[in-house]
Image (cartoon, rainbow, N blue to C red):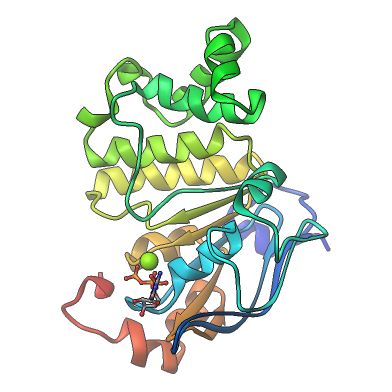
Length: 271
Ligand SMILES: Nc1ncnc2c1ncn2[C@@H]1O[C@H](COP(=O)(O)OP(=O)(O)OP(=O)(O)O)[C@@H](O)[C@H]1O
Ligand SMILES: [Mg+2]
């Protein structure tokens, strides 16, 4: 289905086909007695940015872990681009094109920005660390690394050790490393955490650019203005369950969402 009207509001690329790329059916993840994810149904369309929100402990990261394969679901089914990936380990899902960033950025601190990107590229292109080191200085690989470094806006500090980078640049580097694996789905866990307004605006631009390249994105975020402005659709989790789903404005006006989440005053969720 061509989304003639919606594309104007969302800024999606023109004439894209609204094709389902990911579907979750009744997905459950329990930690002993705790139902962290409790029967979630969810879909993601091609070139869509889906915001995943909810209070602390709602199950957002757990759901992302279940999609990326870091955790196996107890029940339910996950289909990615027509393939049932429910029981596939994380590395096989990565090979199929699922890439992610973590709530706490984890770069290789003793490597430079460029070397961090090269590791991501090498994993995709060469499969092993030893062949990566043999090949990483090849012209075409360096060129690809520079393209990604330019896209994330880190060219000026490409030779800097990542241990010395401020949080705003680290968050972009995390996204760059995920892009180096040539993903067809990007999962972002609180990429704007700890960023100031200017850094958040730059990150919004980057996320939009990535979507323009045809990569659908699931974005977990607590900062309401950030996630509401960026997302085409929002899913709200609370205590492991999906309590609302829809356009940012529908969700923002949902009484249940207001009660459990947006209505909080004074906390970080109210921003
Ligand atoms: N490995 C684990 N073992 C046991 N309990 C866990 C584990 N991971 C998460 N939980 C629990 O599952 C629930 C959901 O956690 P999760 O991290 O998914 O929430 P979240 O929505 O990402 O929260 P936040 O916004 O604070 O990041 C929480 O009660 C958490 O304590
Ligand atoms: Mg989390």
